[in-house]
Length: 126
Image 1: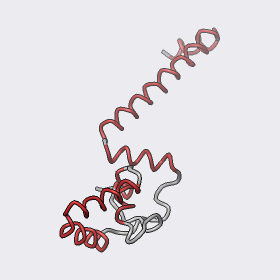
Image 2 (image 1 turned 30 degrees about the vertical axis):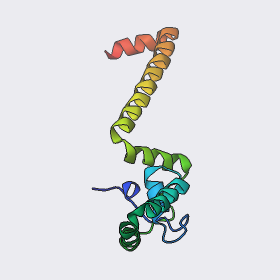
Image 3 (image 1 turned 135 degrees about the horizontal axis):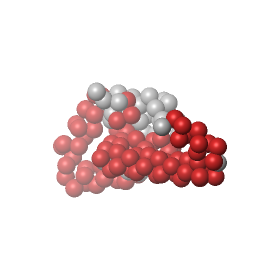
Image 4 (image 1 turned 180 degrees about the vertical axis):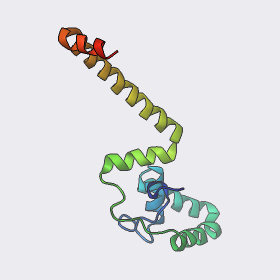
């Protein structure tokens, strides 16, 4: 099952012609200028017979990007990271949860060690 945030779209809002290069840039997290420059370079190198039909085909087959796909730039950057390397993103999230758990344990030990009445009540529950 594909999430709408991990799908390749045409980005007509930021696109120049059909929005294909802008959509690829959004999908990969690369600046659209560099994707367009790579496309033009591939045309000049000699991939002209392949690149033009591929661009037109992608422009016709890809769906338009929904206007409110991301709430902010931070969410967009997160989903680009998920698309680029899901395992790394999972490790980062797991690390953040470990850090939160450690900080909660520190808060709990602070309050329990400084509050003898709370400590006694917790001991009664065990």
